[in-house]
Length: 530
Image 1 (cartoon, helix red, strand yellow):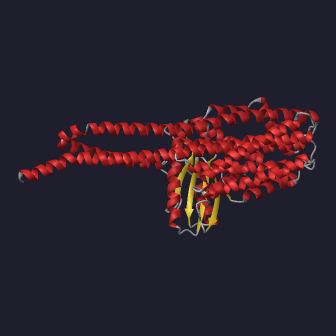
Image 2 (cartoon, one colour):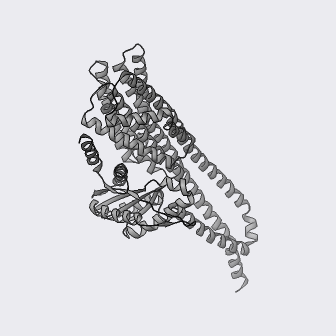
């Protein structure tokens, strides 16, 4: 090779690191900007979630409570308190609708929730007129205010799937359980008050009362399993105080029909229930503050990382001359670093989508694969199966978390072997697992779930110390038919989750199908009447 050709080769070798570094810088900055956009969106979703949670768990129930006070306890201060509560609802509702409008074009499902919420609040406004005209009674409170609160809880449940950051997503998952426990407690408190006032509850009221009490207990169990903050622990601890235990026992007596309505009992029920509501309201406000702070922290960290990256790239540009002088060695080093980076990126990508303990998809990986399946657009039917290990907390408490990890790892293996090869499996959080079954109707999904349930029930889990454990699981199944759009899967997950609650309520270690909760409630009522 002549000198000219050699110089060209050397020049190419000298310029190559600079070109690689320049291209890498562009990619890194683009990646950092994209992450910043994602985390800014996470922050905005966190704000919308916290506002929806506050409106559904605090502001609307406060107006409902003040309306009850206004209708049942005439007094000079009650109208003022009622107007203040109404103003708070209107302000929080207006703020939330403004936030949803900003996302409406990008996420049509949020626009739909906004329209549903607007209709529910319009119903509250019409009811206010009846209250002011003296044409309303307390028996109507639940029917007027609960739909708006439920929509806000559903909105939070949907928004948590929009969060990219796994830590914030887990916080919102816990927040949903907290909102459900609070909503169920408010409903149970309302019907308990009506009963102790001497009102004869209708069959529908009793059904709602029973389901609210069951939902509250199950949600408290979920919160205890996924305990994540001091504020949450304080709320759960309240349930074990003398006040909390008295409310729990009195609720059971009311449901059993053994509680005799009396003014002293009503006064204590009202006093204890108001104390619980106030305590939970403060706790939820603290949790909301933590969620908003997490969103702010994520966005701030992303901005800081971007600035650091830009600064680092500037420094690297100044050092490019030195890299060129050491061209041959630098090219080899850059090549090696590039290969290591690619391996690291691949490892990080797999780690971001896979649960490290079970090897199944995590929530983010499940969402990504679900989008891929939906984009294919070939499914005529789809089913969702959610299953949850029964009383798993006892395994951790008695045998330790290492034993719990052994059980969860083995459950992941059982799930992979028993579900169909094309089914999408994920660890939904804690001891809860989620499966998406393409081209599968509800009956077939129930059969698959039953096989998995039997396999889990029949498996012995051997620990290092020689102890052999057995566990069981409860399953909830839901399915949908074509066309299957982007809103179907979250809705199926929600319905399967309700079916799971039904299986838990019915005694655990069983498979429950979407829609069976009403049947179960009717059967229990018939048994009580018999």
